[in-house]
Image (cartoon, rainbow, N blue to C red; front, side):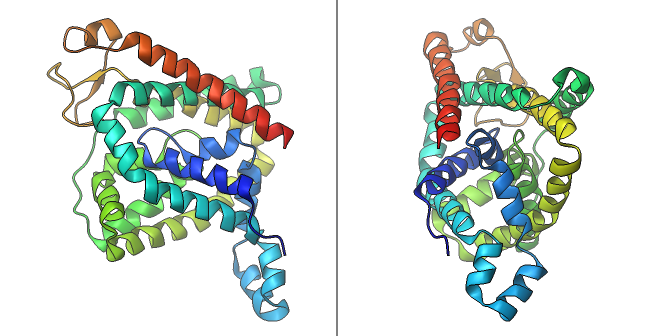
Length: 301
């Protein structure tokens, strides 16, 4: 029975860190680190057949069927990351939003390049790439709603957000932000609110088990089109994570991605505050190189 994997655990930590940030997807991290297909197939294996195997052949056979060591290592990494980094990421978004956004901008840009390189005969699927771009831009133009944080709304939000979390591109955190549920979920993590966390996690589990089957089918039967669409989503999501933003009145945002935000050029931002252009640009470039290095390490493992 294959057990704990440190390499997968570290990937889980990176995925968890990404999923905490609005605009960055844990699915992107899974893709660039070479475990995306394995993740989809392992999640797909968590089905009734696995349950039947558990009672018929025992826990070892079931564990092997669902690739349990891989899933356990990944889930532990994600859980440790979310629990430990929720406060750090929140602090970074509040105190150093420009450099942090620039870092993720570089990460996503490089990730789009990596996904695009895996599309066979990419020129034939340009239409799907543009579809992905338009989809992401439209999502980015939707402004946050106001929904009360009840167990039911947390459950439904988790089911919807997990679909985005598993896709490279639009992040589940951003979906939560659009629903007005980002702060309640982060608050539940910080305060360890059991009822809220269980409601949200149950929604994530249900949504994931349903969505992963569709995703697996697309990966097997329409992989080039899916990869082209995901590349477009990654490129389109750059409008969401663009560092320099102002509110509808042309003033600094009171909070990250507050209602009415608009992207501006760095020199327009400079009329209001220091755009930190040099530092942000260098950090964005560092993000690009970080992704390329991670991809190379993952290929050599």
